[in-house]
Image (cartoon, rainbow, N blue to C red; front, top):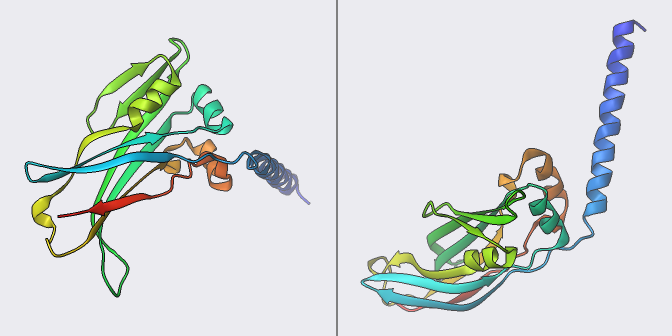
Length: 196
């Protein structure tokens, strides 16, 4: 065996060991179960020919998300709202899909929580994580769909959920997020009827 082959073999063994170590650490982190996000007080209003929605989203961060946030990992929270048209023989048809994205970040020097709303471009600073999450979870007067796009003789359903966007996590953390459920808010769809 030449010196080059020995070096290549040693390098691949070191990489294999590092990958196995990383995977075992990921598996150790998975028992921390994610907590659920709850959506309450959903409402839909017709204002000037546009349906607008409102709701309250309560986030319950587990220890993994809390530690990641406080160790400099920004979390991208996605609020997703869909309008579905009910059909007799097939699955419901997606009529509208709205996504609101918020970045939650902890600034260690100022000890403040920063919220960036990507839809409006606004950036707000909060003293506590609870107040930052309450701001993100306060869905108020959000334009959803023009009433002209809905057929009056059809039945429609609005559904909403919130979760962490795993794709937006930094690359080293993303692998952990895919392997462990602790990186998900486990937001279930909350749905209610929309009457055109």
